[in-house]
Image 1 (cartoon, rainbow, N blue to C red):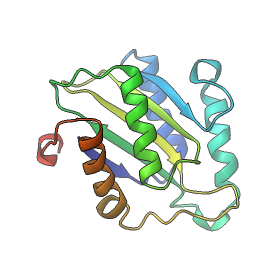
Image 2 (image 1 turned 120 degrees about the horizontal axis):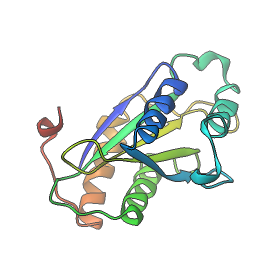
Image 3 (image 1 turned 90 degrees about the vertical axis):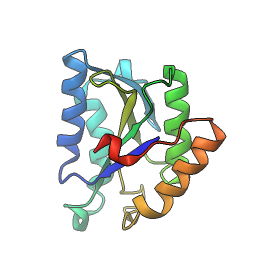
Image 4 (image 1 turned 30 degrees about the vertical axis):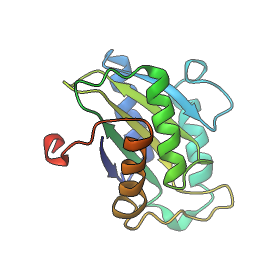
Length: 161
């Protein structure tokens, strides 16, 4: 598994990217973690509203309030939607985002299975979850643990550069 973490300047841009892929038939929203509705019951604005409500609680975090994560898998791995959701849930828990709202998109537009996760790092109390070195620290440890626990192939990050 290879993990890429980006901090977009706009949660709307990250969500829009994934939703456009859905409209083009190149992706589907397969899970809505910590939302009251499932993805099929929500349009773009309902999905965005949940994230934006938290972001609005911290005016100081205007430029650093969201994460766009991709989890990439070996082309030989045949992962079901259920397995991808499980991987996303375990990953989010291990990096300290278990209670944050997040959306999981399965993409079908490349030669390898992968998913995208869109979330905010603003908690319900308005405080920001520190994402400094999140990739090097929690994410790398989580990746290795998940590969072992869920029997996924370890990959070279250069393959997905």
